Each structure stands twice: as structure tokens, then as C-alpha cells.
Length: 505
Ligand SMILES: Cc1cc2nc3c(=O)[nH]c(=O)nc-3n(C[C@H](O)[C@H](O)[C@H](O)COP(=O)(O)OP(=O)(O)OC[C@H]3O[C@@H](n4cnc5c(N)ncnc54)[C@H](O)[C@@H]3O)c2cc1C
Image 1 (cartoon, rainbow, N blue to C red):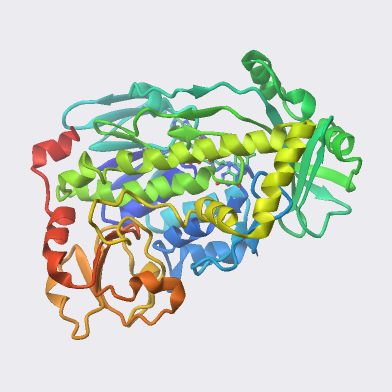
Image 2 (image 1 turned 180 degrees about the vertical axis):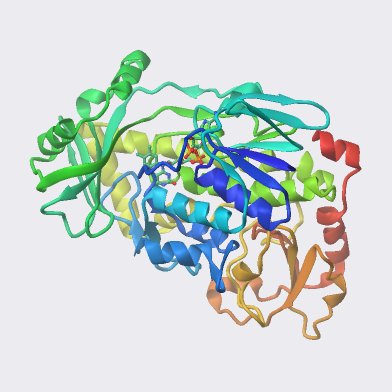
């Protein structure tokens, strides 16, 4: 094997599918004896659907098509459960909505894709040891040693891979514990509801499908705990009776609560790995960052981690990764850790907004809610961040303004950018009048022509004549004349010397 992925959660299965698409020999080892049917994340944001468009499921379909078919698109999403929603309808994406879909359905679709692609997924294989040398990594999974050139730890918050690699996971201890359940309601609200009581706590009710409703919130007496109290509280299984008592006690309504298909507790512990790479071992998703599940961002950001890492690791496996991607400013760790830093800070801000049960908290919510209701710059900035569409990577001095930003789904002469991306090659948009960039084509650079007349929303693209798009859909180079294109292609595609690349030092 080239790569062993530890963990068959949404992030592990995404990176396994992307690596396999890029021609990397990959296998997945998973502790559970079979796929787990847990709701957990129910919110999928636009950028996640965009990146999952890269994965083909057959019949000309993409994974995003499959998921949209399964889920329920809604045009807005809450921030810190404030009643005025962030509006996604005007976002420049083929997916201007939030997709409500239970996490296990997403995982099931990914598992089916891996099965169809014949990527081995070993269930009942808990990883207990990870040992790396200069040449390989060995992983003890379910009592059997597996070896590969690289290991990706996608094994969640308590990651055994992270611990074995000696990567620290500093952060804050929990001081608040919330409740969450997927239930049936005799009287479900037509739209999402977010209710507060300054003395008793908060409750949110989000209709997921015709039959399932997500209910979550926080009791005021579950805030301000010591770390030990919080851990004890978290360890107590949530019962249906307690959920019903919390919902009616806080909101004064019972919504005709029937049975629950899933009950759990959440905490506001926030932790972030000090590095995402130790030699031949990488961390992705919750193995690298955990936080309060606010705004439905955990697996969304994890899937972006996977997308960022997959093409870089595929290039490294093939021995054609430049230093820029291994230890330079475009390395996985350099690009993704700042994104998760912002994510953790964002969820901490939401924690304060959501769980301050006092007149001061109410005033803060009212003020913040009014910013969102105005739909101005604050609302747009939040929508950009939570949707994932505004996430950008560092912009080198003097580079075109588009460099580092996500390429929108520009129409090409044939198809569009999102459907032309692949994890093993760059996309060169030839926007010259005479299609003069064909000579830059190679197995690693797909040249596509386009004539852009896309209106004011994409004004920044008007003068662009050449754009090199990375396999994960971010702009590597853009210019009004292709003069610097050869240098850009060399910088992004010319391999580093092999020993450095392999050691990742
Ligand atoms: C109440 C709640 C609501 C949430 N809502 C959202 C939401 O709406 N949107 C969103 O994006 N996120 C949401 N999240 C967060 C989301 O569920 C997580 O971020 C996501 O599951 C992380 O995916 P992962 O693949 O990194 O890790 P996990 O889903 O934790 O998967 C890790 C996998 O690794 C396996 N594993 C663990 N240890 C080992 C080992 N030693 N050996 C082998 N296998 C191992 C596990 O069995 C598991 O299958 C929510 C979370 C909670 C609790």
C-alpha cells in the first residue's frame, strides 16, 4: 500500500476515495465492526458539495449529485442559533443552500463509492500502534500489522494515530454540556425554531426530514461546570425522559415529542493539534481539531482538509511533489492549520453568543442578530466563512488578486470548472483569443478553453487570460497575459529532490 487511512468516518472515506481517484494504492482500517448509524452532523455546506463533485459515482453522476438527491436543501443557515438566518441564495456556487442530511447517510454514500472502486475497508481493525521509519509506516490494526509509505489519521477526536505520532493536542477543557437528539414530533414546527430562556437555557428545533427533527440545546445549569463536572455529565447517557424534560422545561412547549432515534451530549471543549504532519503521518478532520458543534462545521472542514491533502500526498507518493507542497508555504499543514484556528475561534464566539444565559447574553444576541438581519458586510462575511466558499490560502506578494482564492464554477467551452477538476492534475484555463496555451498541456496539466462573459459577480476574472487551478479548485496562478505561466507551472509541478520529499523534512 502507498497509504493507510485510519478511520472510516466522513473524512477518512473522502480522502481514501480521492487518493484512489489519483491512482494511489490505499486501504482503510476502521475500529467499528460495521458502519455506525449515528446522526451527528446533519448540515452540509456549499463548499463541501463543491469538492465532492470531483468524485464520480458512475452514469455521469458525481457524489454531490447523489447527496443532493438524498438530502433536503434549505436556503439559509443559522449562526449561533440566532433566528435571522445567513442567506445562501446569492452565493456564487451551483449549491446555494445548506443540505440537511444525517451524517450516516453521507458516510453510507462514501462507503458505497469505496466499494464500487474496490478500495479495501477493513472493519473491526482498531489501530493500537503506529511505528514509522525512514522508508515506511507500520500500523497494528486489529492484531495484524499493515505497512505503507504514509498513514493518514482520520480517527476522530481521540485519535490513536495522533497520540502514537507524539503530536500534542492543546486547548480548552469543557465547561458546558449540551443535549442533542433526533426525534419524531407530533407537532413539528414548519421552520427551524431557536428559543431562549434567560434562566433555564436554550432549545433549537430543526426539521430535518418529514419524519425526523433535530432537537438540541443547553440547560442553564449545565453551563459554568468544572472540567471534572463536565466530563461526568458528558458520560451520563442522555435519556428520552431527560430530553423531553429539558425541552419542555426550557421552552414551555413539548411539540408532541415521540421517540428518539439518536440521543447524545455535546461539549464545548476546543482543541487543535500542534502540527498536522509528523514525518510520514498526517492528521485530518477531528483527529486534528475539535470544538463545539456550532454552525455544523466539523466534518465540513474535515472534508476540506482531506481535499487539500489528497492531491499533495498523491504527488508526493508519485515522487513529483515540489518542495512548495511538502514543507513550503503551500504544504498541507501550512494551509489548513490557520483555517482550523479560525474555525475553533468562530465556534468559541458562537458558544458565548448561544450559552450566555443573562440579560447581557440576550443583549449580545439581539445586537448580533440585527447585524445578520441587515444582510450587510457582517452577514456576508459570516456566510462566506461558514459556507466554506470564502476560505482562501496565502496570497504571495505581487500575485494576482485571485491567487489563493477558490475558483468559482466557471463555464468552460465544454463542461465547467468543478466537473473538470481531478485530484491528480492541474487545470489550466486558456482564456486567450487564439487558444495559445495548448502547449502547456501534460499528464499533470489539463488545458481547457473558455470564453468568460460572466457579469459583475465575477468581474475579477474579466481581464484574466490564463489561470492555473490546483486539483482542489484553488487558483495557483492568474494573469492578464501568460508571460509568467511557465514559471508558475514549474513552481507548482517541478519535483523536489526525492530524499527530502520522501522524508517530509
Ligand atoms: C451533536 C453533533 C452535531 C454535529 N453536527 C455537525 C454538522 O451539522 N456538520 C458538521 O460538519 N459536523 C457536525 N458535527 C461534527 C462531526 O460529526 C465531526 O466533525 C465528524 O464526525 C468528524 O469526522 P471524522 O471523519 O474526522 O471523525 P469521526 O467521524 O469521529 O470518524 C473517526 C472514525 O475513526 C474510527 N476510529 C477511531 N479510533 C480508531 C482506531 N484506533 N483505529 C481504527 N479506527 C478508529 C471511528 O470508529 C470512526 O469511524 C457534529 C457533531 C456532533 C457531536
